[in-house]
Length: 149
Image 1 (cartoon, rainbow, N blue to C red):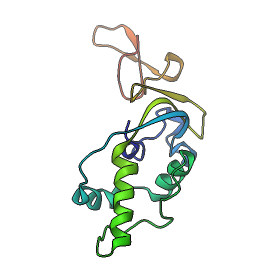
Image 2 (spheres, rainbow, N blue to C red; image 1 turned 90 degrees about the vertical axis):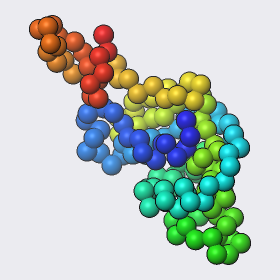
Image 3 (tube, one colour; image 1 turned 135 degrees about the vertical axis):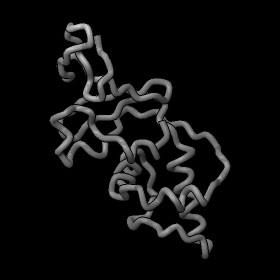
Image 4 (cartoon, one colour; image 1 turned 180 degrees about the vertical axis):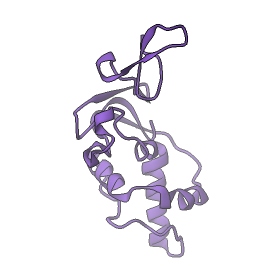
């Protein structure tokens, strides 16, 4: 799971939807891997306005990345310093992946396990909601509508 992805995730438990503490999810026991990718400054410049910078800096600090600037860069590459900041962001957001571990909600404490780089966001039955199916039976579905049983 690329670190860029985490900036767009929040806890799936319904009671957490209105809580500011449910974002960002916090990593625990994270095993990181870096995979080199071609540098794409255009992509970074276009994604920067969509990033929650406070979430990026806190996630980076939790994972031990100390070279993330406190203020969101504007995406300019006019100076060598700005170019280096953009390259560092590329490394953090695009090349760094969490392969194993878990993400934890700061509000309810629910843990989302990460295995082989894929986070499991299926909720257990007690956190889903019952709905009537097309044939009149009741099934348990997660908040996003996936059948759990």
